[in-house]
Each structure stands twice: as structure tokens, then as C-alpha cells.
Amino acid sequence: MTLDASSSEARIELLEAQLKEAAVEIAELRARDALKTQFLANISHDLRTPLTAVITHAEILRDGILGDLAPRQLESIRGIISGGRQLLNQVGEILTYARGAANQLTLVLTTFSVRDILEDVSALNASLARKKQLHLGIQVSEDLPPIVADREKIAHIIGNLLGNAIEFTPAGGNVWIHASSASGEPVPSVLMEVGDTGVGIAPEHHDLIFREFAQVDSTPSRSHHGTGLGLTIARKLVELHGGRIWVESDIGRGSRFFFTIPLDQSEQSD
Amino acid sequence: MLLVEDNELVTSALQILLESAGTRVSVAHTIAEAIGAANRDAPELVLLDLTLPDGDGLQLIEPLRVAGAKTFVALTGHDDAATRARCLQAGCVDVVVKPPRARELVEKMREWTGL
Image (cartoon, rainbow over all chains, first blue to last red; front, side):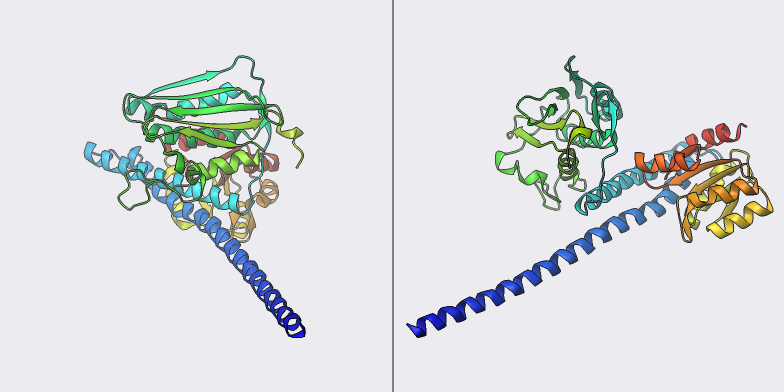
């Protein structure tokens, strides 16, 4: 009896010591993770400076400010500018991700029309859709009131979803954005859908795609490029508004991404 | 006009661009340099970066106004509504997000200086 009692006491002591050790280790890992996130935010901000110089110099040449260029030279300069701007966007995505991970993103609330923002985002993507001969449609319920939310962040969410829809839909397909009142949400919300007739996503990947740095095909030869952060950022920005995001899709059957945003963010308690 | 920006790579590019609009451009890399430059020769227009090695660029608005500078435009890497609002509140007439679109900046320059 006494032997048993003392041995189980000893075991409890050992377990307690191990727990303490694990807690210290977790705290250390969290601190290191926070440092890495901060580093990511700093470095992506710093990367913008030399990129600004590269892009501005290239645009000076393109615009003939230092004299006219031959057509082939102009073509080459345009390549530098598109590459530079693409890199700048990707750096911006990493910065947004890092700020989100460090909980440094805050909402700037204004009242705006959902139709206006859908039209703005689709106008930004129109030339890309045209180039791939995709039909891009918008549909907004007439009864949808203006919403109080962070306009830039809502545009960012729709832009990321629409960008993916365009990228993953073969030529001749359809891409659409719909907005209507959501039913069954805890607070009155708008339901937005960004859908496409593209390659689709297997059901077992539906959770994975919203996780950081995940692309369903992560081999070096993967045919689609990007930071892999688009959906993680979209989810973060939706959740920051108190909404939720999900996907309905299957291989070869297109994808429909849905998200909800409470109609009046200023009424959300935080 | 006075361009206040700490990074040499960026100032060299912007200087070429801004001068193409027909304006003389002086460059300052710090708050201290900017105040010195404005005291020697008060600029009509100041294009100022927000993060300078010796402080927040917006701190420059008051002393430069006293020195005779008229119009202020902020130059920033942060493309968000909060930064924009902070700059306008501090007295800037406009906010330029880096990198600016070259042609657009030249057109806007003419607008700001009334050329």
C-alpha cells in the first residue's frame, strides 16, 4: 500500500514537472513565433522601398521622360514594370498576412453600397477576365441595404476570391459575384458568393486551402503561382468582421466561395 | 519644391520624375535637413515621406509652414484609409502611395502647384 501510494505520488510529481517544462517550452515557441511574424511584417515593408525605386525608374523610361524608346526596348521596360508590380502585390499580401497573424489589423468603418464595391473590384479584374475569355457577372439583391464595414478589406476579400476564380477557370468559362441578405446568421448579414466554372477543389482539401501557405499542389512544378496566402488573408479579414467563409466545390465542378459580413459592424460588440 | 525621403534609391527616381514636370527639386533625407533646406529657400510644395530616420514626417508640417512652405503632400508605403486620414488631418492636401504611377504623379504635381 505505502509503496503504491509513494510511487503514484512520485509519478504525479514527475508529470507536474513535465507539464511545467512543456508550458515553458510552449511560451518560448509562442514568443519565437511572434518574433518571426514581426520580422515578416518588417521585412515585407522594407522590401517595398527598393521596389519603389525599380518601378519608378522603369516608368520614367516607359513614359519617355528621358527620351523615346524603340518598340522592343519599350516592351522590355513594360516587362520590368509588370514584374515589379506583381512582386509588389505579393509583398503586400505577405505584409497583410503578417499583420493579421500579429493581430495588428484594425477595421476602418464606413457606410457603402455593396453593388459599388462589387463593380469596383470587377472593373479591376475585367481585363484579366477578358484576356482569358471568361464571362464575369455581378448580381446584387435589390433589397440589400448599404453596409457598415471596412471597405478596403471587403474589396481585398472579394479581389482575392475573384483573382483565384479567374486563375483557376479555363478559357470560355463563367465567373460571378453574387450578393444577397444572409439567412440564419446570428446578426443581420450580407452573403457574398464568388463562383466559377473552373477546375474545382476536392472536398478533402476544403479546410486545407484556408490554412497559411497551403496550395493544394505544393510541388515545385505546380502550375499556379502566388504566395498561397490569398485565402488565408480572406478568412482573416472575414473573421475580423465577425463573419464566416466556406467553399462548396468538387473536382471538375467549379467552386463557389461564400462569406458573410454583418450589415452593421459598428453594432458588433468586441 | 522640396522632396523629403530618406532612401537614396527612391529620391533619385522621384527627382528625375518630378523635375520632368518643370520644377526645381531639392532633396532632404531627414527632418533636420528638411528644416535647414526650407529655411534657406521656402518651397511652394513639399512631398514628404512619413517614416524618416529622425521622426515622423508629418511633424515637419508646422515648422515648414512657418518657414514659408505652402502645400504638403504625403508619401507613404501604407496604402490604407487610416494612414490617409492621418495625413489629411495633419494638413496634407493629398497622399501618394509608393510606388506612384509615374504619369499620374507628374499630372498631380501640376495640379498641386497650379502650373
